Structures are given as C-alpha cells and as structure tokens.
Image (cartoon, helix red, strand yellow):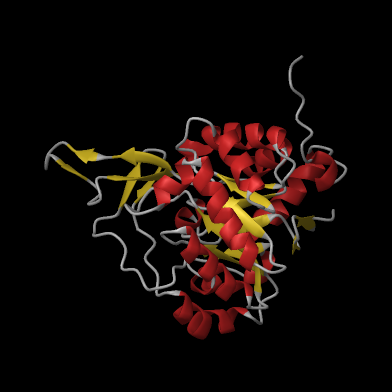
Length: 305
C-alpha cells in the first residue's frame, strides 16, 4: 500500500512524524532505529537566542500520561544550524523546524533564518506552549495574536510550508484554527499539551518546580480527537493529528477523522523505537480492516444522522 503523503506543500514517504520536544533533533534516537523510516522529524523548539528552560524538577509521571514544563530549553538557532542540521542533511527524512519566540517580529526573523535552509522542509510555529511565562500561552489563546504571528512567519517563509501548532487550552479551538488560516497557515498541527498539575501529599509541594505543566500521553487522546474532528470539519487546510498516539490503531483514528499525518510524542519516551515501526504497522492494519488505500480511508468517518 502506498503510504506517501503530500499536503500543504509538504511531501513525506509516510504520515508518521515525531513531535517537537519529544525526539531531540532526531540524532539522539538513531541508536533505536532507522531515521529514514520516519516521514518527518519535528526538531526541538528553537528560539533566536539560547534558552536554559525552567528549573528542575520539570517532568512528572501521571497514571496515564506525563507532565512536563521544560520551558523551550534549546541552544539557539545558530547552534542548530552550525552543529546539528549538517548531520541531518544526508538523511532521507523531512525535517520540520519548530519555532518559538516572544513576539511576532521575532517569529518572523526566526522563520526567515530557518526558511533559508534547503534541508528544512517546513516551519512549525509554536503558539501553544503552556510552559513559558512570556508569550506562548498568550499567543495560543488569542486568535488575533495567532493571525499576527502566522502572518509574520508566512511573509518571510519563502516557499516553505508554514504549519501552526494549536493549543487545546482554549474555549473554541475552531476560532484559533480559522485565525491561523487567516494568517496564511498551510498546515495546522494539533494538539499541544493540556495544562495540568501534580502534588505530593507528603512533602506538600508541587511535583513540578514550575507548579503547572503540560499534560501529554494517552490521557489526552480523546481531547485531541475531538479537536481534530472539529478543525477538520471547519477549515480546508490539512491537519496533522497529535495526542496520545501509542499504537497503529491510535494513529488511524486521527486519519479516520481527516488528518493527513500524525505526530508521535510521549510514546517516544516509553518506547524509543516505537515511531520507527508505526508506518509499517499502520499499513498492515489498513490492509487488515479492508481499506483500499490511506487516501480512501482518510476522513471516512461515518457520523450518526
């Protein structure tokens, strides 16, 4: 079965991507599998200048997911271009740069720098990170700011597709999706983490130094499916589904709703080799359930009358 996908100006050999912040820059996971079995790698979030991130502890397990408050720790875009991207250039896999900035102008500047690189297949704009105090949450929760940031990146992205990653921590995700489309988004990716908290009854302290954190993993999949369903029905821009994917069946649930691709996040921490076999497992499952093709299966959900 042909598992190639082409959407919003992005072409991949299969619909499996790794979610930003869960897979390093890809090279860290090379000991666990062949990076070229992936459709795409969303690199660790980048900012113009290096960021130290939030204080420790910043990860806590929950019964059905993980809380994290990393805070976009990264070495800065120039370090990425000089020391990391060259090692990815020989890999036959789409590399998507994830952008983080504190204002629209900075987003645009960062987008222009990364768009100039041939190996960068697309730009993913992070307007939804709930873990940083300055900027992230405000952008993702205000449709006007989403449009402004998307416009700023799109104007300087050249021919590179611009993908906007939406937050579920809003009352109406459809209005946020439309705002990104109004700003020129070629692709939407959703969802990012849900804001959560964990406390220790003995120490009487939060388990995360940042107090609140982003919840990911199986617990958020029903929320992610609802959001992808609503957005796919509301806009014509292709969608990448994210949230709690830990099996081929999970991934095909997002495709059934209309997603063109999926991103694997927390499962990378539980099984570092998981993403490498996912496209093959999806293909086998499509054949098992009698689907003619990935394209025919996409968006074929039958709703009650």
